[in-house]
Image (spheres, rainbow over the protein chains, first blue to last red):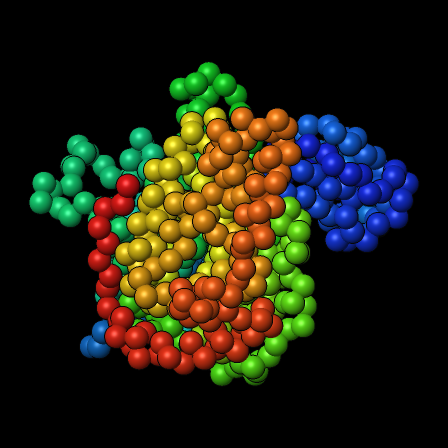
Length: 74
Length: 517
């Protein structure tokens, strides 16, 4: 079991959240979509696992390196 | 009477010099999860290829009768060897002795490393672990004698080597002071994730100077330097660091008077990936995976990215195209739309210079919305670093192929073209002084303000401008060489690789750069 903190690579806002806590996800699945510099930026799961927590909601402002979600693998 | 006694003594002293820090020193090193310098050299080089230089360098303690009481080996090991059959020079500190801080014999060999690589025209690999000089000095007795006034500056050869042979450094333990300087004076640097720290000054100095206690890892661990840009890549462990070094050197010539070795390629130059047709979303606000485009176009399995954690809006990689080593650039539209930040610009300039020094042609996939803007970007001095990147591109002497894949806006876009670039465009291309979104609001400010519904007016103007855009005029006016189906990218670029072979032949030798802003 390993907990993976998924960080934002950009400053922006949360546009859509595509998963719920408890969902099973595969590596590369889109967890949420951010908006930054007028671009829609997908945030992908780094691993196969289960979404343990979603730490942001739509329209939240996020900063670079802010933890957006936690995915547990293994 | 023969010279047998002395010859026997020579062998005995060589054996003593090979002992390093003794069993206790080696055990300490292994307990910390790190290899000794000799194990590192064996891990890096082709099996059995190491030829040590200075086999008996040591600091002997001799009694009045001339008998050796104690024999302290030089704590820097140096020699030649082979990587994938090609000759290299390799050296590194022996941390099991005096923590790698140079003793006199070790210091001389470490200073010779760059001279040796340049003299024999081979790449230099530095396997670093050490803290540089100590105020206790290098163990010499008596009054301190400085360097003679006519001595060449110690750092000159380190700078000169960068324009002569490939220089690679690995941080494999704590690296501070002078060794940290050596680490960054490299074309490629790598550090291990859990066992290396890199610091200009270590925790003791920092606490004394700034009054703040801090650990080595907090100060200079991989988490810091993946983002600081002073190391290019992070390695999972020492074996991974050696793999990355071996791989990196495979793209480069052994010295600047040679060309990079072209390999036989079993990936067809005519290969056309269907997925390229959908790689760029039709909606201009939708992001895509830039790295997957490189994988689809370049020779299969040949993409070696450098500096992924620094200046993330610009991706730099070495790769092969029809077997020819090339430098590859692509904007990362997922990081602030790929706009050029101060960090991305520094990374870009350094990468273009690497390609220039070693005569690697450059393939550049452009999706550039412009320089990063905003208060943080102004504080970072973005436009100065940006103009250095532009200067590097327009003064580059290697052949460039530019593929316009989406945006090409503003002055930053000038950084993506060298003189006489071979220019291809995908139908998804859009360019101009400013993107439509934003650009319209600036150019038509009065009309928009005067309208009854300014928002509707702005949208109407944007739609009008968007409808005017068509990709075909670029091909018709020969303002690009070819407008292509994205799937044709690899075949077109592979043809170009054949055309430039005579140009690459003519580039052998050192380059000259002017000072950049």
